[in-house]
Image 1: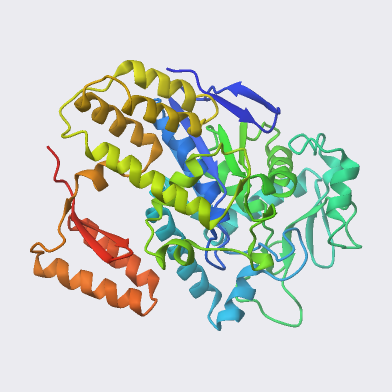
Image 2: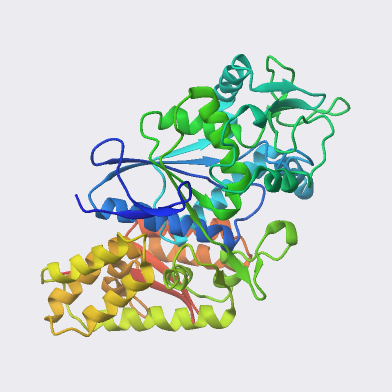
Length: 470
């Protein structure tokens, strides 16, 4: 097994990765709060996690990947104050919370497909595991980590040694940050809700009975309950964006280790922000977020351009979004596709020297900019074209740029297309014209299952027949 090194937020250093079980990895990635579309800043985290997963698979690890769907308990204040984001989203769109969850979960999964992000082995919604969350809170209560206030059951962070071991901030700094949301009943500013009570003057759409009263779980408890359920003996890697470090992930560690008395995940890996011009974080709360559809879909740009755009920066470095940057990435990706098109048919062998170079950089904390450099070095080398092609297609197992499909599909413009396929293509065009992008993506997937791929270009839809390789 090759050596892989990751930067571990827990230790603030690059460490050799060693899995708990030989040749197997337990991976937990924090999923979306499904009250709105994911913006491209959110999606940066999922692309980085996808690269991580692909690198592990490329190194012959069997990965058990768990991702949660937050469909309850994430309040607008991100800590314990304000309104539940799902309830707010339902009111905004005059729908039920359950309808909001279904719609935006579907939209998120469509985004993953468009970006060629591998789905997790296990999807888990917070509302499906209320019993597990209550059970975990009861354990914490029995161990004297909790106390009750008028609005919920809280975790007493003063009872947990090394509460700041992930954030590496002194406790006074953490407490000062936590004072943004004032709750006079909390014993410590950093204390957080495990269970929130429903308002006495109104009924929530999502609420459950508990030993403490009718209400709903806090945001943090779901990830602890579900990761412990599915990865109990494989707590290898936990991922997310850097915004999760000081609150969400810090609280996950406190409640999980408080309950089990054991270490909660060995490696914590975090991705940096995608910023807008001026260095400001993209965020739904600031109403400055951009989605895949309004950046790429409406302009007929392949969403894989965004993936290629992000591959050019290390996942721990902030990236600034700009239209010029996207256009440069579009030109760069098309140039790469054209370079590969000239290599002929797949009849060669993977070159081990270049593969070893590639492994060295991707296994060094996912250095994708250097990996793209290896690709260009390979293309300019004296290897025969067939070996170059076979090697690049092997590299694309990590890059995820769908080189195989895009280069070796047959362009069917102005050629006969089966009537069944053409009807689906026409229906998809109508859905896009009516801005029903969820249906449009569903039809795209249906067409692909039948062996054809649709690409949106500035000249309209392009149809490609898949599997036309030698």
